[in-house]
Image (tube, rainbow, N blue to C red; front, side):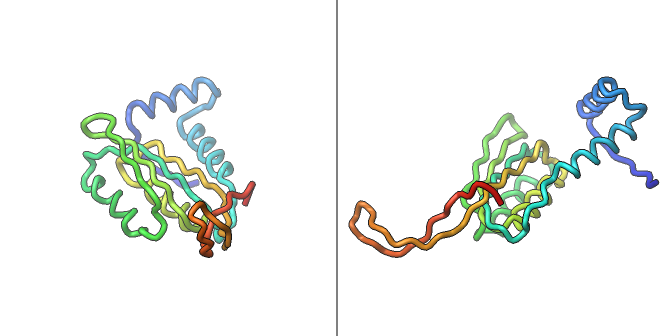
Length: 157
């Protein structure tokens, strides 16, 4: 067995202690092992090459050193995948950020996981929507029929 030391804030420690109380776990270590096992098993194994739209959301502590610059730079570095982004200030140092990304499951998931691991990022969530790209030739209200692409939302990966 490996020994790992973690630092968590007071609110998270209180939530962990409440979890221990409600589940009957013997210790914080036992509870954390259980939560890690559950979290890892809940991650769906999706095909990394499948095309998707990804909605990446998180709360950002803007006062963490350079985080306010690194998050938008991360989207700029992926300008071919970033479709839209919204940042809403919640108070003087905290914002909730939402980014809509387009690409392959593996790429979008890797971006989100790296973002969520940053110090100062909380409540990260990734929602993936399976899509297929279709070439289409049809008339629009302008009467023109140029060939162009459409994304079609699929029912599953």
